[in-house]
Length: 436
Image (cartoon, rainbow, N blue to C red; front, side, top):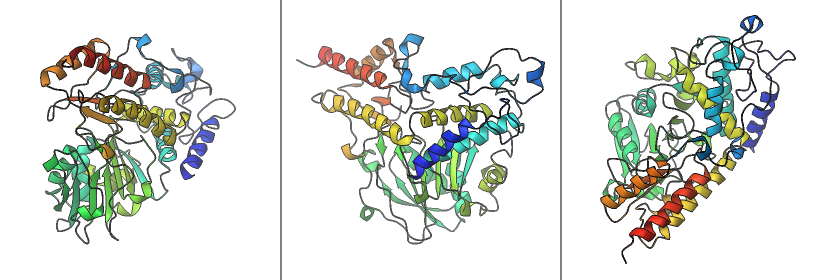
């Protein structure tokens, strides 16, 4: 209910951003980035105001774009940077030279000018609506990737003598655990390494949690190995903070933000291009960083300055804003989750129904909805499949270099048609290569 109410407020706000003269009148005034605008050289009157726009339908909603092939585009199954919604990319192309009639590209304007302030404020407002983020949480637009947060998390939440627990379900959780050892007493509470990261703990009884630990860290979805926490997260004791790296399933489904002290995510999987990392931090956790914490890793630096302490990744934030609005237009994260589950079911059904020609090594109950790894009889056959798929307009299917195989990343922006085309090739390839 809270998510739906927040989404409704955001949609109402979009209809009231403009005054009667169609102008942005103040930094708080925000023009929908999906408004219809005139592109071209601004006249004198346009130069004298911050921006000019008329609310309309300058971009086709995602539901109208059934196939991207007619535009000469491929189906991009990359794990990140990953495919973006076709309508969002087209809107960015439309606005690139002259954003909202301001006479500047989004890449040229000052991050302290009211034009960009409207962009970053609206991006935050739409993200808050999507995830129903409570008011007692900061939303920070950061740089350095989620990997930089591997350092920032313990530096902000721990003293060097504090213990933090790590549940390691894949390569990214392992990297976070190893980095934290520099800044606190990192405890390995559970690891799936012995089974090649094909499962996650099914209950708290499997965990070796530390009483009084400052935080428990999980990677919500492991991009490389294809395992995902679904509805279960570890229960933490009073005073212990639950922290989640949600880089590769961020905004793919509803999440109860209030269960977490910190959620962080690199944007380049599901909500934008590379260059911006989003952190959602409970406000009482801001301001307690270790004294030696670099200023750019201190959450308070960015919270106090509204993510504008230094020049932010303006274009990446703008693109995230377009994606957030597109997700709202599609009906919010409940609707997105249904679409994602449908795509994943199509692909996993094809794998499981192949009589072993294709094999997914991950335990069925924790298979990722976003990243689907599978193998074939030999690396040579996998290479042939990847090559043939590329020739048919389906690219970036090669598995991560550390594990091999094939991997299809089917994030929010991957159309159902792309998954169906991949499955059709899988069935045809099997018919031609299966041992008789």
